[in-house]
Structure formats: structure tokens, C-alpha cells
Image 1: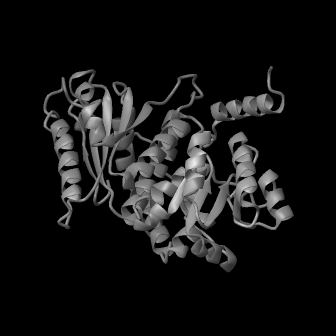
Image 2: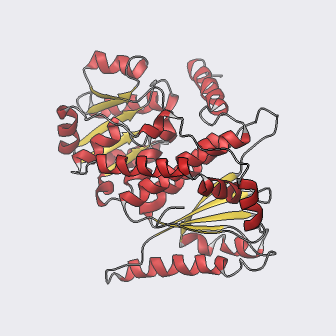
Length: 379
């Protein structure tokens, strides 16, 4: 699949059957605008504000936050970023208490999501209007209007790209450049991998079968170390929100993705996955074998490797066999590789399933009801 990723397919799927059916499968064409992987340099005032802020606070929900986390959680500078993706008063208060010189990046295409409105109000009451960067639609929407009115720094979100696919956008480029990282080599890496997949989409077909086989009830994204948490959460979102849909033939598509943290989950759900129903695909996001003498890093790698091997040794027995995927994730380059394969998988699988992977009608209905309740709350 990718150079640093190993895929072990359980015998129940049958490699011969996979190869025979692949000959009839759908081509991957990379039609979506996200596959251009193009960004614009941020204005210098934005770069300077990001460099000057001791803490970068990204305010948003779902696709406004998770693509960034999937890209940068692995970097050592990620500890200077805080995320506000809840209106829980205790969590918000704890974040506020840690801040000394923040810049708040409000990420929302419209600015009309209830959570964004409430959080922005709290931020302005506590910190004023001088430390806000609006990342929003280039022309329309409540947040764009406020940015004009209050003369906030601002960046644009491409209107043709949905939030969960916005890894290569001006805002993320600005974050990386404020850390001294060039996004251009990463974008070129992404473009090359997409070109490879358009020529040979067989890895996408294999992944689709492993994740959406009729026997699979759960997709487990098992990350070892907090540096891989953002990637696991984004993988959960992008597969659930993109491919959990009703197809044109009326068939309901999708498999429940679940995020597990290692080694903690070894002491809570590993027993179930081993001896309970054998109906999961397991995808490990693992650290590289440590080159340092850190005992903690060595222990983390050993625990991840041992858990993965305990599943791999069962592949020969169809009764206990579950698909196992393992992706080392220790650099931004590793993150780009995973992002590209998941983005491509979404478009490819949507064509096979005959669904629209790029809308979210179920989510939008909940937002509408929330706005109605907020504007006229019941007694």
C-alpha cells in the first residue's frame, strides 16, 4: 500500500477472490478538488501573530479541528496548540486558565454553528477582540461579516472542500510555516501518492474490503501514544461521516469506527476483541521502534508490538481471524501518507457504494434543530 504500511489480510477474505473481483472494480479518478493539494501563503501579519502567540487555540468542531490534528499532533510543537471543541464549562475554564498569551483561531465556514457562537462570545468577554484569527468562508457567513466589522485577521477556507478534507489549506500552511516547516514538499508527496493510486487503485480496493467486509461490524483505530490520537479521531470521523450513508439503491452503508488508546485499552477491551465476536478490523497506529534510550518509549513500542502480534498469530485460523492493518506514525511525512490513502479510499468507496461521500445531511438536521431550540428555548 504505502512504503511504511503493512497490511495483513485474513484468510476468510481470500486473496484469489480479491484479485479476481478487482478486475471488475471501479477506477480511482481523484476527481475531488482536495486532491490538488494547493495552498496560498498566509499574509505576514497572520504568520507574525501565530509566532507571537505563546499558545495557539483552535476553536471549532469536527472537520474544523481534526484535519489539523491528524497532520500536526505528531510534531513536537503540537504541545503549544490547544483545541476548544466543546461548550462544557469545566473544560473551557481549564483551557482558559492555562493561557498566558493566546491567539484564538476560530475555524468555521459559516460561523453559525451554535457551539462556535457560544465559544466566540466567551472568548470575546474574557480576552477581547485583539487576539482573534477568523478562518472562514472567503465571502459570506456570520464569521466573515464579524471579521470585516471587527477588523480581525482572517484566512479563507476553500468553499468547494468540506471541513473534514481541509488538510492542505492556507490555515494549516500558516501553522506549519510559523513553526518553520515548508508545506510544499508535503503537498508534492501527497500529489505523487495520489498519482500512484490513480494508476493502481488495487490498494484502495483491498482496504475497502478489509474495512467494509460483510462480517465486519467495527473498525478499530488503535493509536499508541497521544501523538497519534488526532489521526485516529480524524480517521473515525472521515469514514463515519463520509461513508455512513443510504445508497441510491436504498441500502444503508457504513461500519461503526471506534478509537482505542493504547496501552490503556489492553486492560479494558482487549479480552473482548480476542475471545468475543470476531467481527472487527484492527488498524494500529504505532510508534517506530525507539532509537533513544527512553524506557517509556521502549515500553510503548513493546506493548503495541505485542498486542498487534497477538492478533497476527491468529490469522491462520478462520475462526479467530480478523483483518489487521499496521501503520507506523512518527513523522509529518507518515501523517501525509495516511491522510492521502484515507482521502482516496473515501472517494473510491463512495463510487463503489453509489453514495455521496461529501455531504452530511444527518449532521445538518441536528444543527438546524439546535439553532431552533437556542433561539426559542422551551420552558
